[in-house]
Length: 141
Image (tube, rainbow, N blue to C red; front, side, top):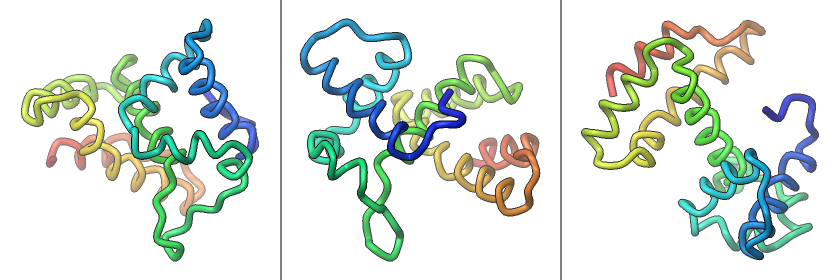
């Protein structure tokens, strides 16, 4: 979805999608997906409306701020996984978590940490994410 984009380009996509959504302009399909995730996170609106400041901000654990772009990006990734059922079985897991938590958004929140962990481990080892280990973590939620 965002392969090859710089951090600034990626963040600008979020800012543009939200600006267009707020102005009721026509959205491209990906912009609509991004705007939907943003709408579910009003706590991030000050960053998105900060413009250039948001493009340059560093969000580090040491700084005590979570990265809103990473968080929203993980929501988008989970939505893509669920829509395509890849890895196989994730749509069923999401459906069950949605039933238990009462909302698809809350189900995604439960799934974010296992996804982030799988991606971090893959990056650290220089391998593709271990889909079976990821699914196993999700099954234990």
